[in-house]
Length: 212
Image 1: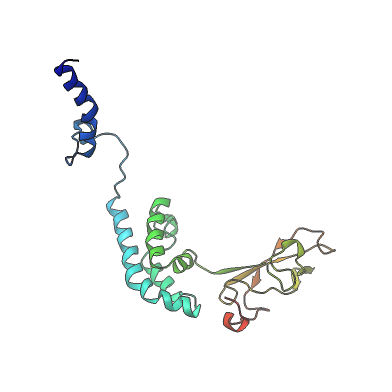
Image 2: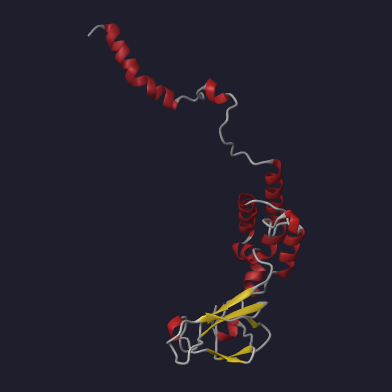
C-alpha cells in the first residue's frame, strides 16, 4: 500500500471522530435558512401566561403549601387568586367570558402551578369541589358489596346507609354517593345519585380517626 493510499484510509477512518468531538459547531447552510418547518418557540402570549403562573407559584403557592398540607385545609384563598389572574378554566370560549386558550396553553399553566404544589394545583383545576362516596364501614371500597340503598319516595330518593373515609367529604360542595337501587342486595348495578353536602354528613378530623 502506497503512502498516499494509507493517508487517505487513515483520514477516512479518523475524520468522523474529529468531527464528533470537535468543539466547533457544524455549519449547515440549509438549516440556518428560514424554512416551512414547525417551530417549538412559545408565542409572546404563551410566555406571558407561563411567567404569570410561575410567579404565582413562587410567590404565593410555595410559601403556604406546607401549612395547607399540615392542616388539611382547602386552599380557597389561592383558588380565588388564581381565578383573578386568569389561571383557571383557560379553555372556556371568549363568547362565554373565558380566555379561549388551547390545551397547550393550559398545560403550560398547569406545569408551573404544579411546581409550586401538586396538591394545590389539583384543587385549582375545578370551580367547585365534589366528593365521590364509595367506601363503607363493612364493605370498604368493594363496589359489589355496597349496602347503602336508595329508595324512591315520590319525586325524591331516600338514601339509607353509611359512607366513610370520603376524600374531600368535609369540604365538598356536593357529594355523589354510590348506592344500590335494586330490590335485593347485590342484584342490581350501583348508580350515582347527587346529594347536598350539608345533609346527613358529619365531618371528622383525620387525626382523631387515625386516618391520614
